[in-house]
Image 1 (tube, rainbow, N blue to C red):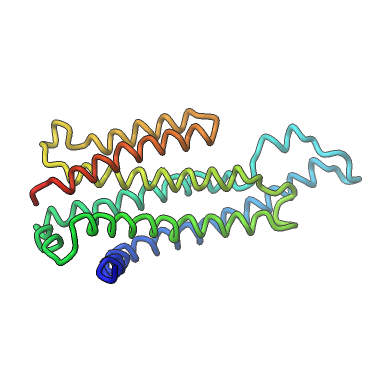
Image 2 (image 1 turned 60 degrees about the vertical axis):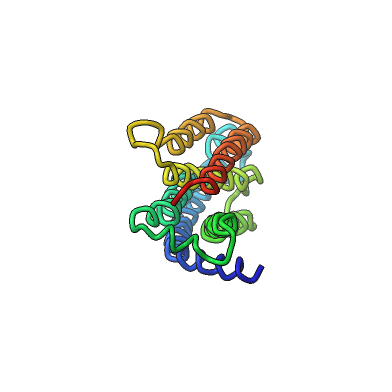
Length: 232
């Protein structure tokens, strides 16, 4: 167990620069977007309310959703972080021929795999998920928005972060594959794109979650089989 923890710490150190970069970008630009979005909401609120406190036009309010302006940023960052971590952990060792050194240790090969998985998951959760949750908690405080964001907004953000995990798994599978580029080498990445489009056309968060869960089960099972049986 101590050896696994030491291995996990090493993998986390390798992921740390990318995790911090993604977290700083989300915190910095997310805070700016939140500030100007809140200001714009209050300006529209005054217009909708009228000078004498008339009834708010509910239809106009529902045309916009608080925190929706952060969606493009929160959509792209997890995908980028998952892609970068997958390349860093499973493509680079193949390019610089260091897999033999990484695997010839006094720990099982399965421990090496789960250590890298764990480091990637923690990077996504701590680097993006935690900051997104803090932004949401701030946005629901009284006075930030006339109408606070609903819990589905928080869940939608975590769906985006799960898509980042899916992108990570697809990148890992393509990096572990030993077939040629023009055959099925990029199956993992192409499969992620397919799941991504399937989620984008959904109107239910539950359906999105189920699509992502199915994709993760397929990709992770393939990764485990390939990693444990491949000759490095």
